[in-house]
Image (tube, rainbow, N blue to C red):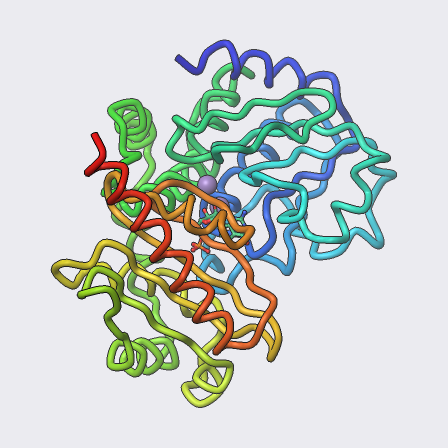
Length: 333
Ligand code: 5GP
Ligand code: MN
Ligand code: MN
C-alpha cells in the first residue's frame, strides 16, 4: 500500500544535502520519532543534516536518543541549509515562524499523515491520512533506503507509533501498523521499556495538576461533552509545565456517555490552545476547523486568540455546532 510513496521519498532523500530536519512546533512522540528516523536515513546516506525542534523536545522525551543534537534555533547552522525535510506537520504555520520564514529559500520534502495536509514540499510530498503515524511512513522510507529497522531507529519509530495510536488503542491501529511493530519487536525494540519511560515517569507537579483538574472537569450537553479549562495559574501553583498536560484530555473521555473531551489551556491572557478527543464517527477535526484548527477525526486541536472566558464559549459553541450537524446528518438519512 505504501510502497510507491516510500520509494519515491527514499529517492528524494538521495538527491538532497545540507538538510534541516523538522516537524511541528511543540513536538510530540511522533514528531520526535519521525525526525530521528529522517536523521538516521540521511546519516546512512552520508548527508549533512541538522535536527531542529521548536522549542526543543519535551522533558518527558529526555530518555530518547536522537542521531545528533536537536537544535532549537536556525541562527547558527553547522552548514548553509539548502533543504528541509518537513514531518508530521499539516500546515506551514505549525512549523513555527523561524522555519516557515525560510521555506521560500529551501528545497522542501514533506512527509505527513494529517488529513488536508496538501503538501508543502516543493520537491516531493507524501501525505497518507491512512497512516497511523508519520513514524510509520518513515519506517517504509527507511526500508526503501535499505536501512534495517533496528536499534535507535527502531526505538524512534516505535515511539512515534505508540504515541499516535495511544499505545495501540486508537482507531488508527491498523493491521499494517501492528505488522510493522511486530517487525520492530522482532529486531530488538522493547515496547514495555518505551511505555515505562513514557507513562511512568511523572513529576509530582504533574500528579498534583491532574488531581486538581479532574475535580474541575465539567459536563455539557447532557453529559456528552466533558470540558476542562486550564489556567496559567494552575501550572504555577502545582509546579507543573505545559507539557504536563499531554494526555490529560484523554482522561476526560473516560467518563461514560462522553462523546467529546475538550481541554482549553491558557497560554497567555489573550491566547489559548485547545485539545479535542472523540471516538468513532464523531469528528472533532471538523469542530477544530470551525476555529481554524485541525488534526484528525478523533484527535484535533488549535489555537484561539481570546481570553479564557471568550475562548471557552467559542470552543463549546464549535463543538455543539458540530454535534448538532452530525445529529442532523444521521437523522436525515
Ligand atoms: P493535541 O491535542 O495532542 O495537541 O493535538 C492533537 C492533534 O490535533 C495533533 O495531532 C494535530 O494533528 C492537531 N493539532 C493540535 N494543535 C493544532 C493546531 O494548532 N493546528 C492544527 N491545524 N492542528 C493542531
Ligand atoms: Mn504530531
Ligand atoms: Mn503524527
